[in-house]
View 1 (cartoon, rainbow, N blue to C red):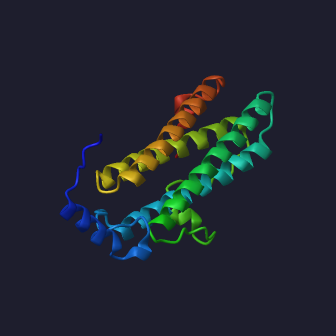
View 2: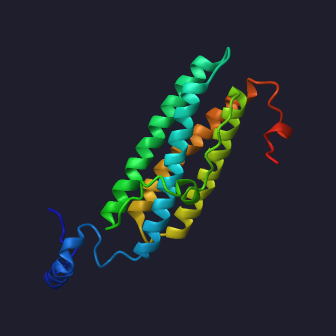
Length: 189
């Protein structure tokens, strides 16, 4: 038989707390993060993912060369995975009572990464790797900011972070296949 962890008084108190602002759904009085800031940062992350989706999709269509077919398919897979992140972020924003900002106006300004149009396959890989590395650091900073104040958002961000790290590793491996992509060429002036 399972032991009760709450006394009747505690259970009544929990029920009373749950009834407060009932229309807020999952956002209970026990939520300790600054909800407006979290929504703001989630919208920045949403913009970042949208820019990555656009870049990967463009690269999928524009990739040319002997190595392009397989890498282009991977660009398409990455775009789909980034779109999954968009959906996760947008859902969490709504769950916290906010509105996801899908507006194309200012998308580059809200994003942590830039949309860069490049022609060569090596440049596509390099720019995507740079974007993934920026996203990795952005997600780590966001997770650190949340601490234990929003475990649900933190867990979601950790899941996204793991995927971004996998993308970065894959892109770095591809660069090794191109002898012309030296470290000095990876530095953008």
